[in-house]
Length: 371
Image (tube, rainbow, N blue to C red):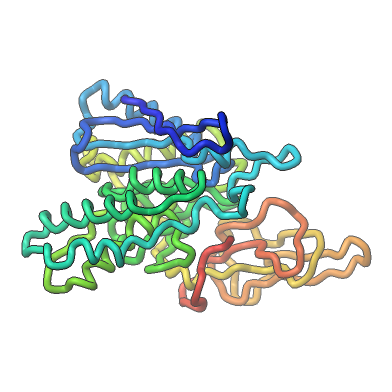
């Protein structure tokens, strides 16, 4: 393992911060896999999975079994990790301006298209190299003005020319689930089955430019812009949600890291006997078919449906109780599906999203992710 520290923009004069990057295998070897954990800094399950993954990769490297390259960022957000408000960690948003650390990544397609126009050939692999160079150049040209933008630029530069990008997150209380681009569903079918994901959510564009889409969207969109030249989809990216905030155990993380290792064997990154892939627990469904269940009033949340439970259309997901009057209203799922996530705090404001249900039929348009 080779470890490097990448200096980031100082938060204030004398307040230096850096990003830790750990590399396994031969630099520049393919396939190249990029893994980062806790972009929302206080989402600890991703970090413990990264810890177990690092231990396994170190052992595999000592055995000479890493044939590609794995780049691991075990704690992707030192800015957010240092933030606390009244004693509570706040890793999802930059406290200086309210920006979500997993939103607002640059849309690289228009600039990359200009760079490759007139230079593409009939050779798919030559085109892949050309697109990767263009994407890296676009990231480098991003005028990252703030420390958070500089962090985003650094992370994206590490990831954007990879074959596979794994962004490790968690929800508040949740089943294991993943998000990915519609055209990469096949690339992550084995990973979903190995991990045992219970919701497999697809979108061409989810809105607000999250990290995984900044890495993966350019490829199908550039292929569509230049139909006379073969541009394979050369970067498959996914956001993996490792259950809920409190699901931090060696047993779970070791199992999850083992599944990631098995997937890397299947991808040819690690030498070894191909693992048996179990049957998937779910089929991919459109992110636009997922339903945010909202609280119709403010009050105490008493859930009537558990994480991982299938609910019917119209089913009561939670009761909302006014603590001053005792009035009770019900928060219901409009459509049926799997309740795959819910909030951790048991008090809601009116209109707050308190749960997510993965349905089958696309119902929503516009921005499909929460804040």
